[in-house]
Image (cartoon, rainbow, N blue to C red; front, top):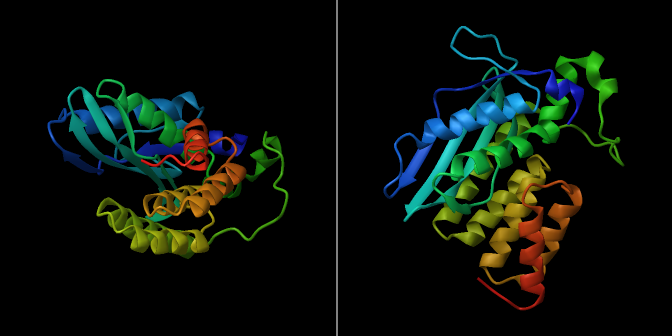
Length: 240
């Protein structure tokens, strides 16, 4: 993560999307929000509060969970916005965790993915150009055109549509939406989602290829161990 990103002032919005199925703690959304704020602060960003605050970015939180006995299954999405326009999107895979552990674990993974998003790095460098030279990461192997705000908005719309199709088990339709999202903004998370669709449709070879592509372009992915396990299972002919 660059010094420019660490120099950002962020605010987690009160307005969040929270979809819950089953008997979940009504305070879960606030627990996840508090965990996200804490993780952002631990990473070195300045977290501001209230409508009168003057952040560089607003972070919008989306949570979707279903409850089982003592466990929650779901994912968290963070969207960083500037002036109402999406700058970066980070999403976690669907995971099972104990209800007491879900907020902290999922918030940590979502924040980590957001802070390493190319879109966020670009925004931070434009906001704090004097800090760019302090970046810790090595330069990219090739120079690519940075996505425009319009491309980011398009990617988000395709991502949202793809997520809806995926949740309805419309995997072919979801695949098309995630591919369109990646064409608009080549964010590694879309490669993961594409792999997930192929796996669900029984396209083992394609799924393995996209999982490996995801890990190649996102070597520090928070779910790396899980993806590597999935690859081994598919290469061994296991399905679930």
